[in-house]
Image 1 (spheres, one colour):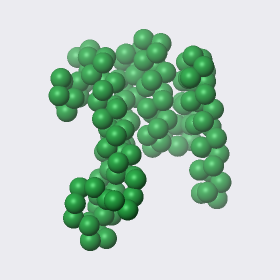
Image 2 (cartoon, one colour):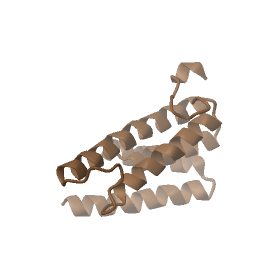
Image 3 (tube, helix red, strand yellow):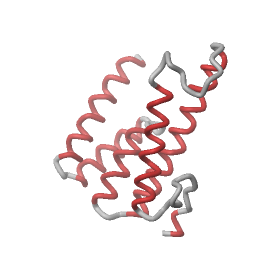
Image 4 (cartoon, one colour):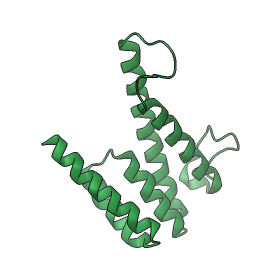
Amino acid sequence: MAMQTTMVTDERIAEAWKLHRSNDHKGAIKAFEDILRKSPEHADAYYGLGLAQKALNDKTAATRSFQECLRLARKALDAVKLEARIEGQHGSNNLNSYDDDRYMMLSRMIHQRLYEMGAATTEGSEVRPVDNL
């Protein structure tokens, strides 16, 4: 059942990204929000939602979406690092998995988007609350 759910979610996320790429940002937002109602910890859906909101110049909503995506990416990266330590790997990069690279890159991309909107420090390491926009 989980495999089927993942396939359906993958198809839905692909459709949401297609809407975003075709500049149907309102349609993309609706599609990403629908995914998040069913899969509330889907980091990629939060990232896409933030990009679509940013494209419509809704900085407050985009910042919230990017911050949630960042929280989920950090949580996933921590889990990947813990798994690596359990498996006896002591470095910061698990060469047997792409997941750590994926979440590190996603975190960097989120910091970049937040910085572009004036919601992060110049170092991109601290994210200010939405109220400071």
